Image 1 (cartoon, rainbow, N blue to C red):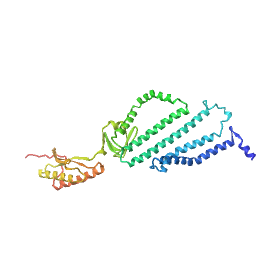
Image 2 (image 1 turned 120 degrees about the horizontal axis):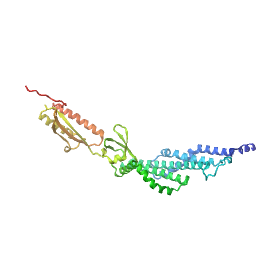
Image 3 (image 1 turned 30 degrees about the horizontal axis):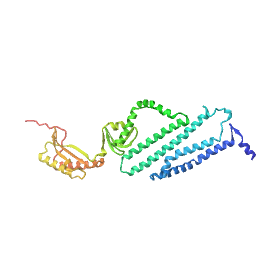
Length: 368
């Protein structure tokens, strides 16, 4: 026993072997048990959130909070472990109140602790956003689907800013009040330098207030057409018809003419039917009447007041019949299907009346 005590009391680099054993043991306990302690803390937080919403499963909650809480508790174990050690007297280090190794290590550790707390708070914001998004999915109001991600990002930025001020105040002992006051002049310079960014930010607020479109809407902005997938601080992301992922600045989404195609109650079809000049007037009248009748008879088309089929004009190579009607569906696939059905019926009608479509050609008549 005396031999063991002698070994444990042996000093290496200013610390006894017993102190190194305590340090290693605490770190080992932290590595082994941080997962279980983190899960226990997550379960307590989960019970708190479950009082307000049952939309989030426990597994999903762990996915959000497991890593940041594990890091936080591991840092606590590291701190307790290092408390068992002392700086060697032979190093002749200055006090932790003066600039030196002690001060650097102490403040670096404080930064890590505060950063882990900030990470936990950010993940809690993600949890809140997930709960609100689940509730929004169950509601009929689509606007909530775009407001919730935006508010979540705002809250996360606020948490990060507060965390930075906490680090500056507690770790570097800066006067946060004076720093915020000094940012007034500096903020003006930053605002001028980041003019485009601020315009896009204001554009995002305009989108959320006016609600010209929502996530999932099919929109056309200038020459761009696509489905809105996400509305962020700076930009709106669209899934185009080519299935590419396009990012459009919010300033452009607000300033440009925007056509929300999802808000259409019906879709217009307009084209000219070109028939040859050897088509008789009786054939033309019959074709016009039959085409109008088959369009009105289609269940997906609007009433006869919106349907126009008439002799439009005479071109150099054809007699033009204008066809205009509306399809009662905002869905693009239904629009294409109905238009195809009617086009096939028009082909059969022209063929039934023994008429022919005109080509872009010219007929030369030679006098004898």
